Image (tube, rainbow, N blue to C red; front, side, top):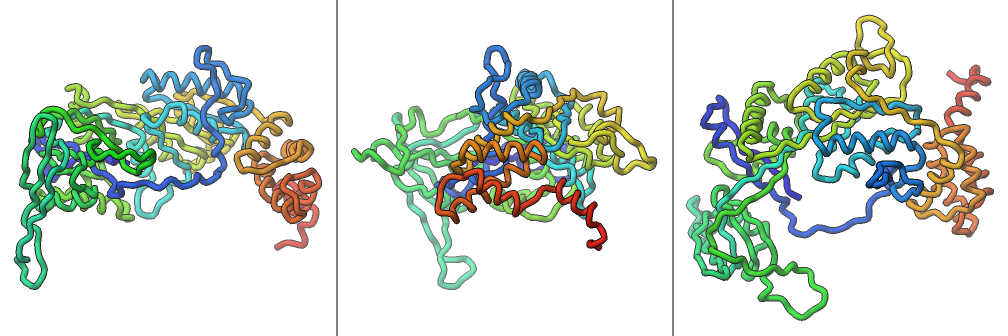
Length: 485
């Protein structure tokens, strides 16, 4: 996983510092990844909007995981096309509908359609509450996370197959019995020639993290000293059918060459990297990562962000970088107050603003944080509503409930009879979709206690007696309110 950050800026920021800002590559120290089974979450079955690629109409099949909401899915498809064409920057979308009608699922489906190259930053309206940072600062941080920057930079690198790797040690200058590394002698070979490099001791740590050995193909950036292990040289390939190594050919050309590197970074990454500058002579990337992992929250000044925006704008004008407006998804947006809504108006009007996608399940309600009891549709001020394209979600029908429950049962690995699904679908029509989806796994437990692997309607009837819905609980409270405090 690559996290790409700009080098730190030291106050006061001069024009020379802005020109010398460079992109550093920070790589995860682990060279091997372990694939673990994905946890089954509420929206694990969502894989896209399920639209026809040519017409943009909603397909009747449920391969994407979404059921129903035909008009909302087609509207979201148009939004995705506008985002890809970079024609929707500075605008906002509102997903409005009753609870359990698939608003969050539509937003996640949009993120799948956009792909991993477009930043998608989700948050909940209650996340802005913090005792350390202002609400507007938290919103701005998420806005900057949703803005991507693709930088194309030509770097001087030393690339080749490692022929020699000799670590030279000397006596520890601090005394004692320990030994210190004086330098590293590294031999690299390409199809055109060989070269022996004398490296700084600080690069030995990077070589160790990448687990570089003789026979590996690597490249080292000459300006930053960062090491990247590409793979094992195909000269060492064996005749086994299954191996853990990735074999690559020996690089062509000279050992010392120029190479174009494409790196993706968000504006928030640039803010964090430059808000916590390291010492002027230190180029230790690990210390920068450790600073980013500190739990303490700090506010970033508007002056620093304006300076970074100037550098980003210059990169874009020079053709070095490409701005990628992402999506900021705020669920339960009615939890924001008047100050946050005013700040969102300002953020949307900025030239470096993402596409704002909001979701709410409220109707006519009060706006939080107002001096007067202002009632507005969806709990959002009218001036912000005027900037929005509103997509409405409809309530599900019983056949749609059956399809959703069938998909969820398949995802969770539950074998259910048709009558059991019909029983849960009817219960969902009178209660809610979330409630009946949560009854799937308890129904499986009841079936397993009876020595069966499939869930029947009798199991569903038993589980409905054990658990009740919120609406039924409210009715019981109204009938027997004297028995409660």
